[in-house]
Image 1: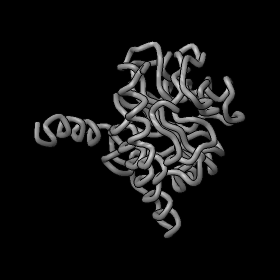
Image 2: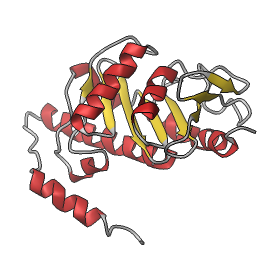
Image 3: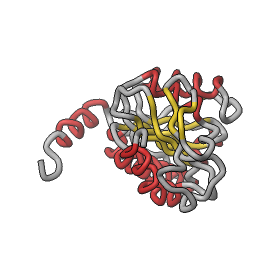
Image 4: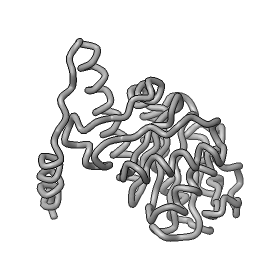
Length: 214
């Protein structure tokens, strides 16, 4: 089966996506490596527990469908454009509530918590365009490039996060969602969130180099 491992990963990680986004509103894709010419992506309009690996569509980075028993997500143009832009291995797109609130407010996420370094110094907002369009894809790529970020809010829409693999993309989507919640709760309490300095963020990045079990 073409991209067997990637298609199985989409199936295995679909519950994590479901935990982030309401209904059937998100999508997840996994690339053939970080520089491959094709990716597996969630099928469109299907509950996250209602498809298996053979159903998962495979699409080229040119946006052309290659195989899979089901039609691919309507957001293929966005995923394909991001893969053409950078060497990333997975993309998670969700309408997670706090991140979507930031997108609706058209509010970028500043570095109010050190975990933002998982995706960059801040999370920008891509200008609105209808979902599933080349225009939206271009807006997302431009916003991420300009900010040097691996995450982006989609104006009046939701969140997209890229990473080397699906597990990291989904985990970083959770980080962004958590920081967005902190930001909005702080503002709701009538307080002004304080941001970390460039120097403080650089220190966090240095610390992260030795984080974990090696």
